[in-house]
Image (cartoon, rainbow, N blue to C red; front, side, top):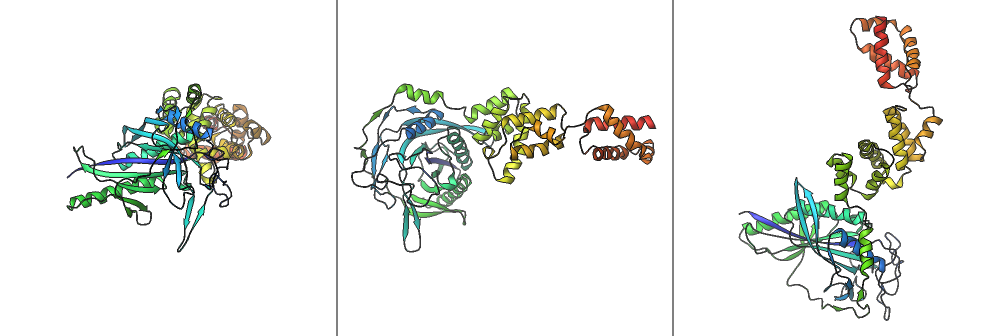
Length: 476
């Protein structure tokens, strides 16, 4: 029997606003526990929530980027449940009227293009963070109240690879809209996966299992692949899949049952009485859309069509916004678009990986990279010299033109000057002339090598090779 996989994803993303969603406490990561919290976050009696305007703006940025229908009447609800990480005993969220509905995100994987339908995007507050030990638990309230958006797809994803591709694209959207650092390993982007299978052609959904709190895109893909195989094995053995809440064990590389899941939990939602409905100004909503940067898919098309960058390179350039921004700013100063891409994907990427830095943590500037490329194209420095100049530029922030002047690194391309060096070397190496006469072309390489030593590597290689051959022939 052949099965169709049905996948829906729920992604929670922390927004990087300066303060929390309903309080003035600062948003932070890695600070000393319980130091970035106030009475609203702790659910103290009489503490009143005040909506963070930036949190709404950030949610709208993502809604626009995902082409969603926006509800300009902001309404909050209470989601009631009792758990140790929820100090108020309820969570302020959006139930009936999410700020965004009916979005879509185009993904590309395995040579095919698909559109993932997004059901809703709603705003809410994060919970506190629990630390479990053998016989006790501790709670850090620093995370309590941090602004969250939850993005929920419809069950339209049909493979683990598709789910991973969707998360990669969504993460790019979050980074390019500048609303979150989207670091799954730090919990600022968290994913729950709903997985079921059904016979091909069936319109009825199978019994789904939910895999909670996956902390990397690769783990999402692995967890889905394992869970699909597990459910197939159960059905083919004549049994039925039980609706469970699962977790992914990274060591075992398999999903593990956390608890049985019956009917949907009744959270007894009702309107949040302390935050009245807010009518957003339509012009403000539209201004947020107008001020969005170009999204990755638009940039890729522009790089390919306008700059003739290969699509594979363009896709890598837009993986992170800082690199895409750096490319965009560099090509304002040079028309050597492919060389800019080659440098960013080659020498620059290698340096960043080795140094464990991002491009905006270095002293390299778009102006200086463009200047370096110009010096290479003009023949002022060789490719070998360019690598040395690049290292100095990225570490010290100096203008490449200044570097080559101060360090006397200009390439020697003068035929007259190089001929003088070569003739002197030939005078001292008559055997090389004899070797060339006898058809031993290695003599050319030897003379060029001696020339490079004599000029401290500043001889223009192309000019040098041509001149050496001409002068050898003249002496034969």
